[in-house]
Image (cartoon, rainbow, N blue to C red):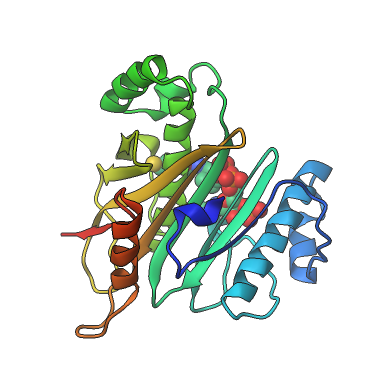
Length: 252
Ligand SMILES: CC(C)(COP(=O)(O)OP(=O)(O)OC[C@H]1O[C@@H](n2cnc3c(N)ncnc32)[C@H](O)[C@@H]1OP(=O)(O)O)[C@@H](O)C(=O)NCCC(=O)NCCS
């Protein structure tokens, strides 16, 4: 399911339970040794997904440990993201020459607990979500908003790992395309710098609601050296096929 949200240069893997046999590396064991069983299971299956996704990218089995502030540490020229929630685990990875950063997030398609929407939404989001929950109750738009913001954070963090405080929910404003499955996250704070020095002002992503889950994904296409075709061209081609705006990169 997650692959439906991602362009072809991103490899992914997902699981709906924890039945996959996966041995942890010693470095991963150290991290998870004191955790409760539920956390151990999600961590382990997420590693199974991460190794599968890395394998599809041509990488051998390696440990994937949480690094600074919990962000997963990938091989040197790889970017990636992990998510897990009840009944779902997934990982997605790409070569950093194709994708500058990516973030994925899955949540149950259920209402957010009381008070959370008000805590995470900026004014225009609150108005839109409240309206759309009435108009189209098939999707939990409050949960989708939360998930989109988590994807924003996961994509933003590797580009600004030293920023304190971390990106707050009030520092991104999400606009959903409710029909086409796209969304745009405008940063309301200064954006992180890409490798070429340009400022990233917005993240473009995709969403879906399926199997009782809401899933969001963001990928920022890496800028290829001048004159050399890169993933941006593949992504642009793919988006023409699929319709909704797909993983567009806007720099200022
Ligand atoms: C870190 C965070 C985004 C994780 O999201 P979540 O919905 O709670 O949990 P998920 O299961 O979807 O994702 C967990 C995975 O996120 C990844 N993750 C954790 N910290 C991360 C970070 N700083 N950057 C990128 N990825 C991170 C990890 O891989 C983790 O899995 P693992 O511990 O098994 O390796 C969330 O807990 C958080 O701190 N959010 C607050 C910040 C925020 O979202 N701000 C909004 C900005 S608009």
